[in-house]
Length: 334
Ligand code: AHM
Image (cartoon, rainbow, N blue to C red; front, side):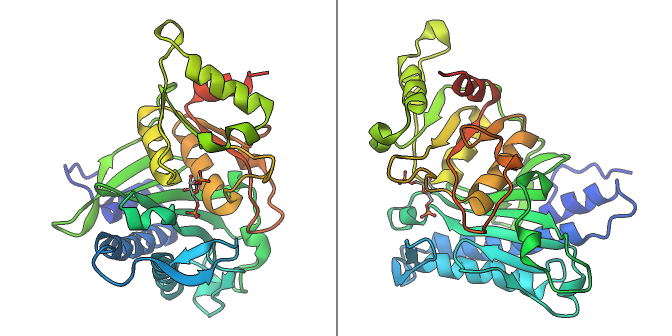
């Protein structure tokens, strides 16, 4: 029996979903609760970023060779901490860490899930008060339960994800997650300190009027991408336009907006960096899963993101994601 209430918290929602599966163990709900808790802690710090000495570079480089901001480290530690001390995760992979971390204790070895995350995406935007986000991806282990998780648990094609989601620290803080059953969004109600269901069963509009891409790299893109961008610029009201270009430089914010309003986001490869900038496991797979559940599409320009078999945990890929018809127009560009 479904409880019919106006306000539903993230915990209530995931527990409610479990009622439809009598054999569910509650591990996934536990994992999402842990992620929600870490997100609330990160939300608090992001909100006072301008006030305390947490802002700015930590003076180190992450494994991608990029400057690490202090909040990146804080967020990484929060997510790792709650998942390590919880009972629903056997190990994690993070954009901020060289290698996977296998929790390897009696309880964690019994957990059937591993989690990958980008603790703070768009971190170059922290010091200018622009929205940033956390992205996460959950896989069922392929290694034997009762033993420590292995790298093979993390190197699975995106199609095998059990759940994926993101948190956007914006004008409000929102957690959006998807399972095969649907994508749902929860807004943090600060008066009760809970994520509450605000965007049930999100569907990405079939088409939109916004395209997001770094125009500064235009001349480094391949001909097909250049042609598609030019076609976007030439849209008029007679052929579905005019289009608007919106590029925040914070993928969580750009893709979130396109998911809700319709649009396309592109981070193509460039002549300097043929694989682009974004990471398959921490950024592209989770968003590809969410957008597909919501009715949109995601590719690397040639193949579906979710079908890519990853070879190493930090690999990058060109990334195109958005409303179905806009993606099909891109695919059909010659
Ligand atoms: P980050 O991991 O350093 O935060 O970089 C990821 C971000 C994405 O959120 C965003 O879409 C992209 O980098 C912007 O890159 P660029 O400035 O090259 O357009």
